[in-house]
Length: 124
View 1 (cartoon, rainbow, N blue to C red):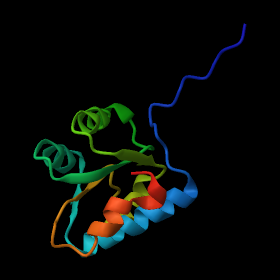
View 2 (view 1 turned 90 degrees about the vertical axis):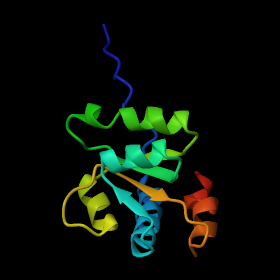
View 3 (view 1 turned 45 degrees about the vertical axis):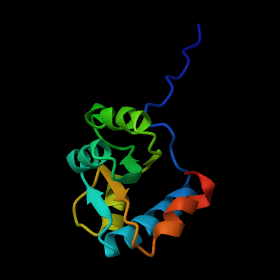
View 4 (view 1 turned 135 degrees about the vertical axis):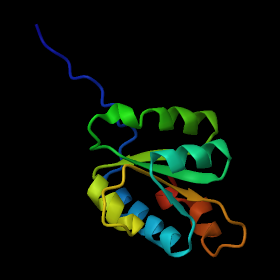
């Protein structure tokens, strides 16, 4: 009797190259004041239709504390992706604490508009 591995709940998970691109984009958004950090802020941004895309950490324990966000993002047609580390996500957001979720919010006057619409490697 073989035991099949349970499919990961953190899907889609970015590979290392895509994670680097996403972290760079998040750093630029933080510098342009277009970043919301934390699960509650992400949920508010999604409900208000301000989010361009959502980034979630896969190493959250328990993962269930943020699994409502992918459902909300899919409902609002906002792309989302998981990255490996909440520590790295926190550094990219410019804070010293680990970050489990963040979103880049839209701003028509921003210089980042073309980068966000192009998306990292065409994923979004």
